Image 1 (cartoon, rainbow, N blue to C red):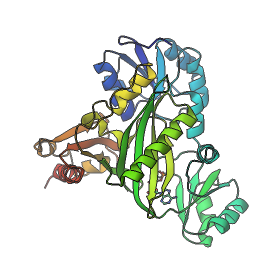
Image 2 (tube, rainbow, N blue to C red):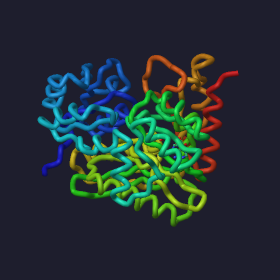
Image 3 (cartoon, rainbow, N blue to C red):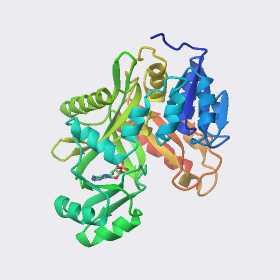
Length: 378
Ligand code: AMP
């Protein structure tokens, strides 16, 4: 298969920050970028050659978009399956629609992982109240009820502390198909972002440690401070996932590291991931360039880290007292500021991130948190 070379146009389904950083990487290498989403003046559209605003269900518009590009990728995995199929009539879609299909619904994702003997938290499929009561009896409390349709960043999840919480939890998620998951008492949350090429080449960015706040990623520290055995196992799991799904592109595996040093997969994201943003500044090849290389059928780039780093998200909350004090954060010479071009700063909305580079991961974490504090005036 001939690679898609610089000068070609690549299509992105979705138009958020992941598409924006992909477009920046693609343009740097001389590709053109077309983005497709229901919105306009989007984070991706602002830095793309062409921005198409149409519904994902407008399959004629999807076909016209796919006709104008050499390959299609996505930055938002909740694109309907029909959209990916319509695009695939005219251009290769990478990762394929089948990867989207498996990973965009929790029941399918967990069943898939389990059938490949990959480690997941104990779970039960819940489609009605009776199944929930039975599942709570089997898995015990605490447990977590999660809607089958993602619900990212903790949306569509309710913790069940005692049996009496079950029915209120069921009503809270809207009585929809769900999974009940046993609660994992974890020591750390970690993730691995990896890429797989058209020819089956594999490269990952190693294991990083993630800290969440209110279910949203807050801080990533790279590399994770975990024993070598854990690193090897996490990378092995990640590779097995990409191979089992036959991914061409980038995928992130989020995992819990239990107190006994065991790794359990929490979630897959078949695209660049927030916990891989550090790669933009701290690695030879970023996760976005890697996605481009994979999608275009080029060899993957080196995932070597140039130095330890840490990434802190900037949510809309940082704007609560007005525009953040960018100059103060910029005064820290080893801190990079990334903003996504979003026009309104709602609480909880991902507006940008900071990355700190340092000689140790712990120092990078300390620096990036200090930089973020400096943004708050007064
Ligand atoms: P998710 O949306 O599934 O990624 O979950 C968001 C966050 O909720 C995770 O990053 C964990 O901090 C927590 N969480 C989710 N599932 C579990 C579980 N089975 N046991 C313990 N904590 C969980």
